Image 1: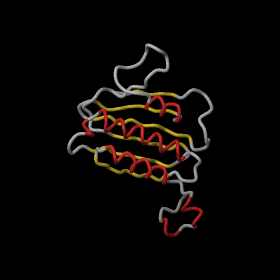
Image 2 (image 1 turned 30 degrees about the vertical axis):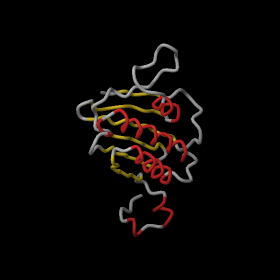
Image 3 (image 1 turned 135 degrees about the horizontal axis):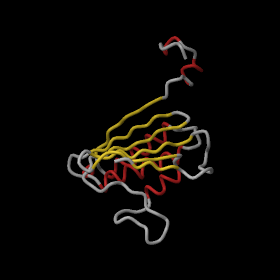
Length: 163
């Protein structure tokens, strides 16, 4: 779209503009805020057919931030970043202090020391996902979700773990 003044464009141009829609929110690092983040994200994706998948991804990533990092302590917080586009970006940033977020294997005997199956669930819903950061500065765990499909049925997802 050539017109950068959104007030001067048609409603169709405004709705389907070339710029992806982005949101960033910070939540207190408490378990009750996981639901708040989940509902917020699901509302943003309403009508895409992937609302529940996005809600699950946000809930899993937010829960991990609160349970496994300094985000869940005293004055802790976690951040949610969402970009709504054909390939949507969902990321949760924590305050660090824990282990490197790791996807649990489905193969018996290959499980990491801590955690359940949250990141494995995210990896099955996402087109690709990854982690960056450090225990000292905090981690951002992100997932790209393909909104062009309603279910993840295609080639195996890619996972990028970057420290």
